[in-house]
Length: 317
Image (cartoon, rainbow, N blue to C red; front, side, top):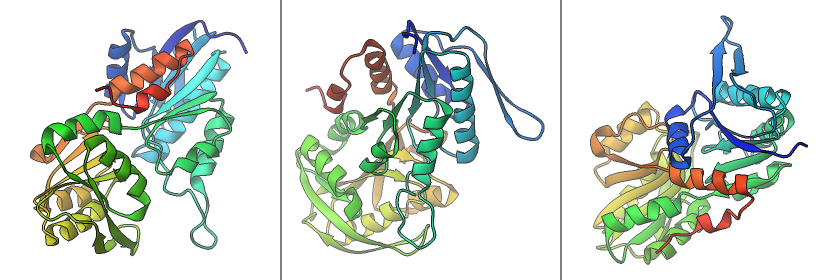
């Protein structure tokens, strides 16, 4: 492999604003790439500049429309590889298909592994991701993965909002470790809500472990689409005497049902999220968006310079 001589940043069509913000942080211009569709819907990509020997970073969250954005990313990778880029790093602020990471029913796929294989086979040399749905997803790739977390970005904002001695709540057992990390950062207590998923869009929260009476609570999770888990947990917390309830979610993927539920959820004061995926509607202030462009930009800088990325996991006091 030829040595990477210069950094090039390219944006897919999934979230161009985030790519522009990352480029601004780095003090460089976005690279010139043309992305279009043939009349039958096929993706066409052409780089408008020399990519040979470049350290190419392709920025594309695989959010909705998931299949279109994923295919576009694969074609971008292939075009960069065939243009002799020295190294190709895919920057995936949100990794779609992450919830299909195991066989929990008979005769179902492990689609997260399939997508990891596709990205690797297309020609990616490295992955930069944020808050993967499960830690084991890093092992699905046969190339290096730099896994960032949104909590160094979200925790300072939460501290401003909630003040001292909050209770951080995991809305289900799978989110317990994330909630414990937030609890350490915020200097608060910890609680967990037991959840049973009925189907893809419906959950039932049954009971609470932990004391939340007269406390400001923060429900933490990596993603939400229907807001069912958050709303069910919030009802349990309110019934157990919580004073105020906020939510901190890295990837806010709300569909129309989720938006309606969040607006109707009087128990939830505000949902704090990131711009890892586009957030065109803040629902009249019910959603507060914090940018992850600086942390992604710094990670890109350090990867290019061969420096450690691990210090970005922590908050600078």
